[in-house]
Length: 107
Image (cartoon, rainbow, N blue to C red; front, side, top):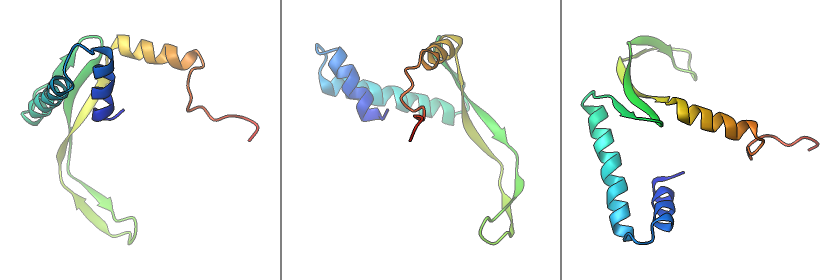
């Protein structure tokens, strides 16, 4: 789901709100969350999950084309940990056979 798809879904569910207001709300929420992560803060949404930063130390990698050793600098990467409710809901939906991404047999 893209940001514009999310806005469209919310607009369809809440027709009493102006599309522009929904768009502004979604963009503001995502911008605030991005800024919080950039500042090193942890974000927790109960029932959904949490976002935090994980530190990746510097290392020596390999250029896949040449095999040459390349220094990869240290960095912080966003990490999402789903909440229990989200994990259970996703697991239940996958277990019920409603997964349209499962490969079909007999092809």
